[in-house]
Image 1 (cartoon, helix red, strand yellow):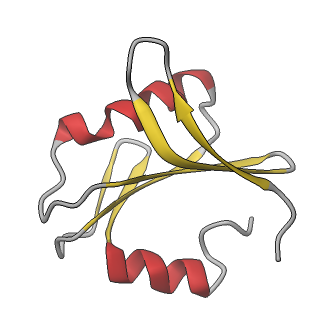
Image 2: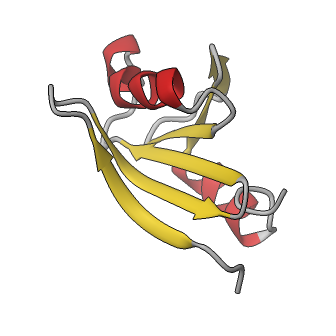
Length: 93
């Protein structure tokens, strides 16, 4: 029920981000991978977005069990991400 807009984002050279939510001054970018292990190259779209929007909050969501931070990106297993989303800890400031 938060005001805002959900979009897809892509650079002309190819890197993309699956979901980008804009709400007021807040931008949340979410890249989802159907893999059990997040690789550094999986962050390409999020890193490209962060070059233009350094204040964006970024999540990499995967099917594995590892939780970690890679630069400015929180890498989370899908169940953990969904719990945080439902609890209001992803889109809310």
